[in-house]
Length: 207
Length: 207
Image (cartoon, rainbow over all chains, first blue to last red; front, side, top):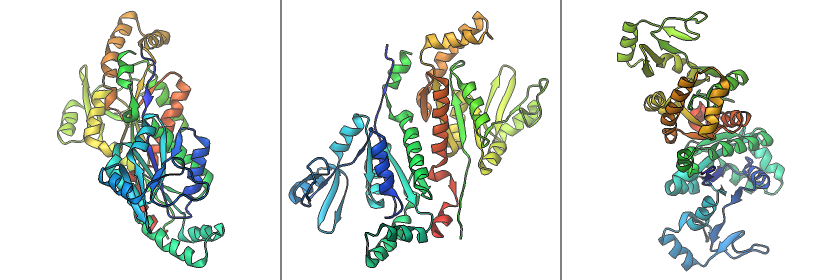
C-alpha cells in the first residue's frame, strides 16, 4: 500500500527594485529552510576570489555559452556589460525533481523568460517599497553607493516597478520580518498545490 | 497620495467525502476568521425550525427558482431528492466586493459548476482521509449513522474521491489541527495574489 507521495519543487522568483528588501528576504529563506536552494547561473565572466565552480557559478567560455544558448539549455539568459549569464535548465530540473525549491534573484526581464520556459513550476513575487522616499532612504542607509549610483538605482527602480502586474503575488515591504513571513506563507501554500504533488493518483487508489 | 489598496474576496471550496473532516475545518475557519463567511443557498425546501431567511437559506418557490436558474442567477445549482438548491451569484458577488471570503461546502459536481462560472475567484481544496479504514472508523465514531447509512457513505466516498484531481489543492487529513492550519495557510497566501488586489496600479503610480 502506497502511504505517501512526493512533491515536485518549485521555482521561486523574488523581484524588486534595489533596496526594497529582496536580498534580506532571500537570505532569510535560505537560512530558515533547507528545502530552498539558490539558483546557480552559468557565466562567461572570470571567477572572483572565493568563488567556486558549481557553487556560485558555472564558469564557461563564450563559445560554450553560445552553444548552450542555441541548444535551448538556458531557462533564461542575459548579457550584463560584457558578460553573459544564464540559468541552466538541467541544474534547475535536477533540484525540482529532488523536491528542492529554487530561488531566483532576477529582474522582470529574466522573470519573463522563466515564465515562457517554465510556467507551471514558477511562483513569482514582486516586492514593493512602501514609498519612493523610503526606498531612497534605505539605499542611502546601506552606505554602499555614492550619490550618482543612488540616483541611477532610483531611476532603474521606477522601470522595474512598472512590471509589478506580471507577477503572481505582490507584497509591500513595510516591515521586513512581516514580509519574510508572508513569503514563507506563500511558499508553504504553493507546495500544497495539487499540480506539484507526485504519485497522488496512486496514493488515492490505494487509500 | 494613495497609501493602501483593497482586495477582492475569494470563493473557498472545501470538498471531501463525509467523515474526512470538512465540517470541522469549515467550523474552525468561520470561528477564527471574521473575513470568512458561509455561502447562503437558495432552496425550494421549507424552512426547518430555527432557520432564518437570508441567514441559513433564501427560501423560494419552485417557479421562482426555475426563473432564477433560467436567468443565470446561480453560480451552481442541484436537485437533491425533491428539492432544488442554488448559490445566487448576487449574494456571492456582494461578499467578494466587500473583501469577504465565501466558504462553500459542496461536492465535486457543484465545484465543477463554480469553476465554469467563477474560475478567477475560486480556490478549491480537496480533503482526503488517510485511509478508507480510518474514514469508516470516523463515520462510526460519530455515532450518528446506522450501518446502512455508513455503507452508503463509504460507497459515495469512493466516487467523491475519484475527483481529487480537479482541485487546486489536495490535503490528507491525518491530524485535524494540522489540516486546519494548512487551510488557513492556503487562504492567507491566496489573499496575497496580485489578481485579487484592487487599486494596486494606483498605489504603485503614487508610491
